[in-house]
Amino acid sequence: MFKYIISIILLTLASCLLQQFLPAIGNLHGAKVLILPLTFLCAAVTVDFATMLILAYLCGFLWDAQHTLGPHGGDPEVYKEQVESIRFGYSIILYAMMGLLMQGIQPLFRKGKWHISSLLSGIAIFLYLFSEYLLINFVRGDFVFPSTVFYRIYLTSALTMLFSPLVFWVIFQLAKFSQHTIRYHGLKRNRRYIVNQA
Figure 1: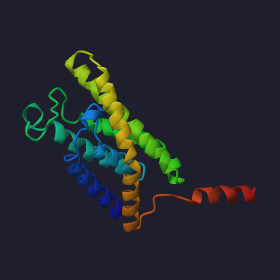
Figure 2 (figure 1 turned 45 degrees about the horizontal axis):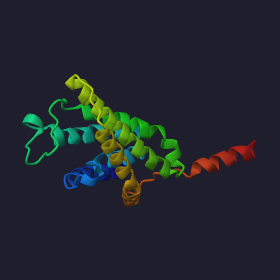
Figure 3 (figure 1 turned 180 degrees about the horizontal axis):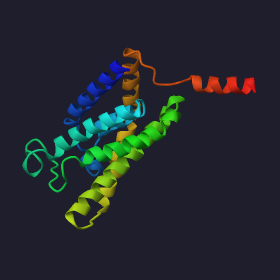
Figure 4 (figure 1 turned 60 degrees about the vertical axis):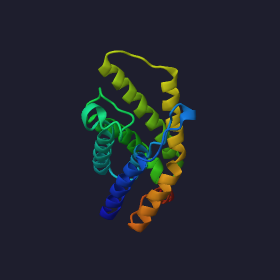
């Protein structure tokens, strides 16, 4: 289990680096693949609650460090999308909320229904981006919600969700390498055994 957690943390750090090189797609209202939140969501369903909270803290810290470090949201040469009005640390709470959502469907995931987790990752990213935008509006003291922002949030969530099978495949490979069991096939056997005994 310890080797698996370390490998997930390393995967999270690698996805944070990769996020820097993923551009926004202009033809899709500036939507882009959010690989760091996706890696967190896919990993959150495979670990216990305490590890999920550690990952939420790490990912939220890294996410805020990318977007809000330095004066006025960071160096404009490095950070193209600057966020001036949000405090450092808000992402940790939003990541923890996304992790709770994924932990809720963990029993289905353990039965091998990873595709439901894949679908929920898109929904969780949509809720994250929507909550983040509402929070920005709340801090600024006004509410402006143009249709282009909705399209960007929706398309970013859909694009990111398309990459979830690939991230799950990487996580399964890490689990195999770490000799860690993610799925619990024994749940169905236990039910049959109880029925036969009755």
